[in-house]
Image (cartoon, rainbow, N blue to C red):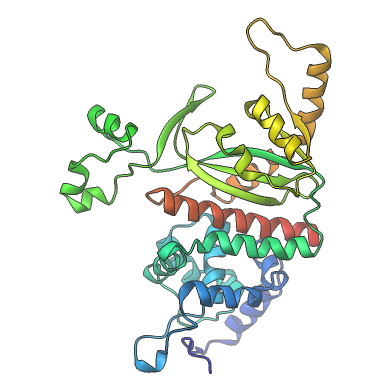
Length: 346
C-alpha cells in the first residue's frame, strides 16, 4: 500500500497542457537527468534513512511527500544553487521544474519547511544520509564501468559561508575551539553564529567557511570520494583519508607532497605523481620542472570539476555548522556526478 501523500490534479486550458507537454519533451539542463538517473533505485535507502518505511501512517499524522520526489527536489535545489524558500517558489512558478519532479499545475508541492525537514531527517541520529546517497550512486557508476580507477586526482576547493561579524575577543575564543557565551544568551542571535567555520587566505584572497576535499577519477572527472573540513585546515591533512587500495596512481599539486605521503602511496602500491615545490636552497631541477609540467597538464582536469560546481552555486553554503556544510558538499558532489554522468552517457 502506498502511504505517501497523493497529489491532486488540476485542470487547465489546452494551451497550458500543450505547454507542459512541450517542456516535458525537452532534455536540456536539469531535465536531462529526469529519465537518465535510476531514481527508484534510491527508494530503499531513502526509506531507511528517513524512517518512512517503519512508521505506521494508519495511526495518524500527515503523510509525507514521497522520499524519491524529495530527493529529486534536493537535486533540483543543488543543480540551481537555490535556498529552500527559492526552491519552493521556483517549483511553483516554473513548468520545467514541475516536469522534472513529475508534477503538474495544481499538484501539491513541497514547501520550504518540508524541504528543510527532509534534509534534517537524512542526517539526524548520525545517519550521514547525504554521504550514503553519494556512495550509493557511485556504486552504480562503478558497476557500469564509469569509474576507471586508472588515476585519481586529489584537490580541494573552498565552500564559502556567510561571513561572521564578531569582536576580536569572540574570534579568539572561536580559534581556541570554544563558543562565546554571548552567542547563546540570545537564541535568535546564536542561531546565526557559526563557531566551526574558519577564515583562511590563499593567494592573498580571504576565504571564510569550509573546504570540499575530493578525489576524482582522472579519466571521467567523476568524484570518487570526498570529505569536508573548516577552511583553515591544510589540504594535505586529509590526503591519506581520501585514498584506498583501489587507487592505481595518484596525482596532486605540491601542497600534498611529503615523505610520509610518498611512503603511504608505496604501501598502497599506487604510483606517485605529486608535484614538487622548490624550497630555500633547493631549486627544482630541469627534470623536476618537466615532471611538474606533465602532472599539471593532467591534474588540471580537477579544476574543470570545481568550475562546473561553481556554476551550480556549490561553492556557497547558506547553512551554519560543520554537519550541515558536510551535507551541502556531499549533495553538491552527488549532483555534480549525476550531471557528469549525463554527459558521459551521451
